[in-house]
Amino acid sequence: MINVKNLSFYRENRVVLDELDLQLEKGELVLLSGSNGVGKSTLLQLIGGVLKPTSGEITINGTDISEMKVKDQALLRSIAPQRRIFTLAYSVGEVLHLLPEKRRSFNVDLIIESLGLVEIMASKVTELSIGQQQRVSLAIALIQEADFYLLDEPFSAQDEDSVLNLVALLAEIKKEKGVMVVSHNTGTHYSQFDREIKLT
Ligand SMILES: Nc1ncnc2c1ncn2[C@@H]1O[C@H](COP(=O)(O)OP(=O)(O)OP(=O)(O)O)[C@@H](O)[C@H]1O
Ligand SMILES: [Mg+2]
Image 1 (cartoon, helix red, strand yellow):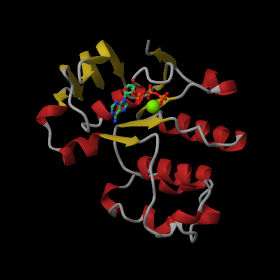
Image 2 (cartoon, rainbow, N blue to C red; image 1 turned 30 degrees about the horizontal axis):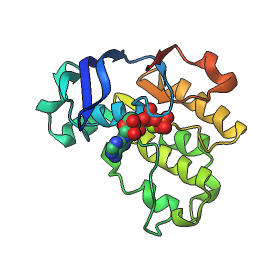
Image 3 (cartoon, protein in one colour; image 1 turned 180 degrees about the vertical axis):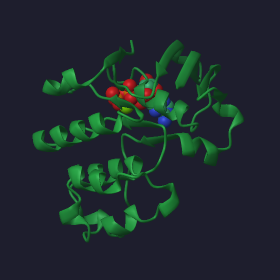
Image 4 (cartoon, rainbow, N blue to C red; image 1 turned 90 degrees about the vertical axis):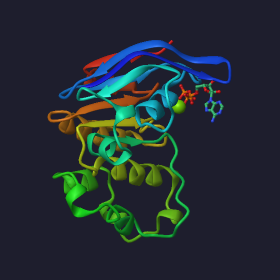
């Protein structure tokens, strides 16, 4: 379980997150919503250990992440950022093979297929559309073996069919893992989520 306890985060002197409590358990697909600027991406960066809490704690499977090495944290959770900028002209296939075999999830083929990457495997990531780049970015996060997956605005650049396929994939992954999706436009797919956490 990811357990966020009494978490506060300040930028300069400004409160971004104030005494927040939330949990993510294996077997659930959770929607994290809230207005622009409310702190959703900040929360994911805190859970990812990129930012440090001002106060409070974040534990994964019972251990405080501040007591874990980054590489051990990476075995437990995988995060797809809101924006991932590709600068090197690797092919999609090459990018997906950067992760060593033993770190990969068992359902890599399903992930690649569900994200519509089969046809663009040989294309350079720098020459893809924004929506295609976003799907590669999601694949990078999802093929990494972990207990928890946190995706920041994975639908933002996706067409209706791609959203449908991605939601179906997440519903499959959550059978064994915990999945949290940041979004404010789930549209007709809202019912696929087990619960919603609204940041205010
Ligand atoms: N790098 C940064 N430096 C300073 N302030 C930042 C930085 N990133 C975000 N902020 C501020 O922190 C607050 C929370 O931002 P955050 O990106 O977490 O919001 P969000 O809920 O993800 O919004 P959105 O829906 O637009 O993605 C905002 O007030 C924002 O202005
Ligand atoms: Mg954000």
